[in-house]
Image 1 (tube, rainbow, N blue to C red):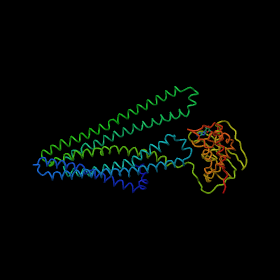
Image 2 (spheres, helix red, strand yellow; image 1 turned 120 degrees about the vertical axis):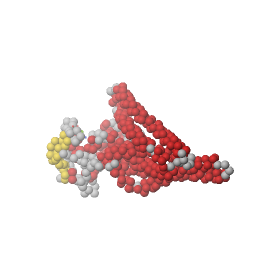
Image 3 (cartoon, rainbow, N blue to C red; image 1 turned 180 degrees about the vertical axis):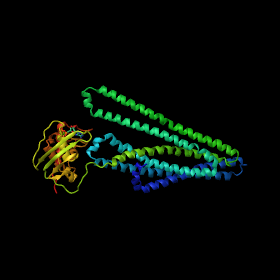
Image 4 (cartoon, rainbow, N blue to C red; image 1 turned 60 degrees about the vertical axis):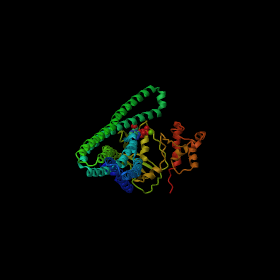
Length: 503
Ligand SMILES: Nc1ncnc2c1ncn2[C@@H]1O[C@H](COP(=O)(O)OP(=O)(O)O)[C@@H](O)[C@H]1O
Ligand SMILES: [Mg+2]
């Protein structure tokens, strides 16, 4: 349960709603627990009347009316409170889910590139969706059902014990059994449904890749291969799904079996005790039947809740693993840093940590402000890596990089990056308008500045030839830019960024 302690700050944040929810849960249970007692009373009223000389019809009707009204009244109140129980506790769990997602996303934004290299996108996604979802089950339903169970059990047990102590002990014997078997069943269901989920993401990753690469698939005429692979993936999916269905199908029969067993115990042992006089009123047996049926579901949920908590613990552990990572690249200073432009490399070496490829080996050069340097080399010789190091997307393993005689690992990182215009080889385009894709360079840029930068990047004429001009959508549901257009877009972004700082 250690990992789940992380959530305590959230419980503290929502403590009043949580407390209110718990009180409402208790109230809801108290009212619903009037039902067995009142039904027992009703049966007693009827059986007493039937075994009497049936003369006092008025009294009989009054008693009947009173008990039925109370029954309806308490059921209504129990219903109202049950409604608010969900409205409070489940709402809190949704707020916590929201907060946690934001916290994880912010952490993702902070973490350095090397983090993304060593973790798969699918894992990042599942932390923020599936794992948070499982944690929410702990914050909401698990706590709600536990409160439910505890209140119900305590009150029902006291009521039953006062009524018929030995019968009570007999009928609660099957309950732990029920709880235990539901626990094992839930674990099976959870582990199998995790497998279904995991395989489903493999399947969707495959499909997504096939769609994005459809042009390549078709031009190499390998659709049949793609079909076969999909079929085999889908086939595995079907098998896993059927495995899951098999255990799910056991859930209700098992519950019914154990409930039936408890009912028989009540009838058999209760009946005998009624005959030998241990139980005075026939209504007690009916009352017990209602109790037993009321108790089985919450007792079953105890097993279910235990497995929810275990899952949540594992999920929160995985989330914590990410949340507690310190970004490798930190901003060391908040002092403003204004760049004039001289760059100096001093014995810089750099190896990509994930691939162990040494991209830069003991590189030194020096460049004054205003000078231009062209670097020529074979593919993969480390040219782009130099630029990544200058904007501190990575830290060098050894050596120092200076800008204006200042070690860049010691200056304000935000200012440093703000003053670098970097035209990347492959421009990533977001699914948004052309205008907003260029504005990416500087969010507050005006439309005129955007057009101006597109003109400088020689992209303006291309854009105006689209019917929607600068509002043309790019990406998934929009226009696809050519390779050359993409690179110009990248240039336009850097121009609009205008990375010379003004103070
Ligand atoms: N993000 C990365 N992770 C791991 N290895 C990389 C990464 N980027 C580049 N490399 C490797 O580093 C070497 C230098 O790459 P790069 O600087 O992009 O070369 P160039 O730009 O000169 O073609 C290559 O062997 C490449 O495989
Ligand atoms: Mg390159």
